[in-house]
Structures are given as structure tokens and as C-alpha cells.
Amino acid sequence: MSMKHDDLIRRLCEASEGSAALSAEAWTALTGHPHTVFDGRVMSLEGAIWSDKPCLTTSLSAAWEEAERRGHRIISLALITYAAPHYTAIVDNLKTRKRMDAIGSQTHALSLCAALLAAEEEER
Image (tube, rainbow, N blue to C red):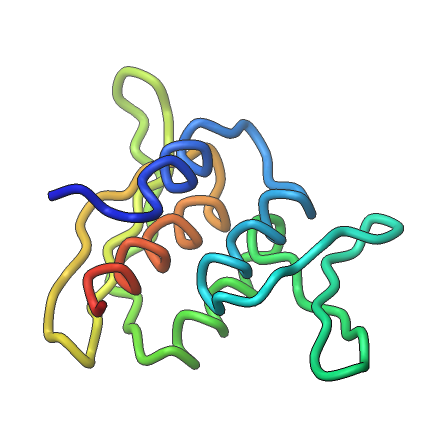
């Protein structure tokens, strides 16, 4: 199945660390509204007001909270050490009752962010 966010998910899985730029892209993909980076922070324009957004790809707690807020249950977030070590995330989408398995990346937050995007895409 081809997904709209395949390229972003691939880049999240290949990145060695998260960044505000990757987080801005992830927020844009999740919300459909443009997000940008200003002075190292992720920003969104809501009406006429700029607001800070958490950096999903560097903060595990921010990614976890956003996943839960969107109705996803994190089943597993684990370090896999065979071959090239990486983290995997398994997420249940409680709206569609589908599970996203083994989205792997270099950090917990990147892996969970990739899984969140994949789960959101399944919902559409």
C-alpha cells in the first residue's frame, strides 16, 4: 500500500537524531497546517497568533502525549540490538482497530513519530 507520508516516514526512520525541522514536517503532515522553525523552535500559525509546538522528534514525552491525544495506544517501544541497533514502535489505532508494527528508527521519539504518522495515514 502506498501512503501519502512514505517519504517523511522513511526519513524519520533513517535520521540519526530528531530535529525541529523534522518535527515541523511531522506536525504539518499530522495537522494539514503549515508549521515552520523559528529560532530553533517549531511554530504554527493559528489564526493570527504564532504558537510553539512540542518537538515530536526529539521529545519522547511529546510524541507519546500526541499519540495518546490522537487515540493511539503505544503497545511497545523497544531497542532491537541485532544487526543495526534501532528502536521499534508498535501502536494500536483505537479508532480503526488496526496495529502498526515495527516502525524502526535511531531514537525512541523518531520511531514513535514515524509510527504515529503511519497510524494516522491508515485512518484516512
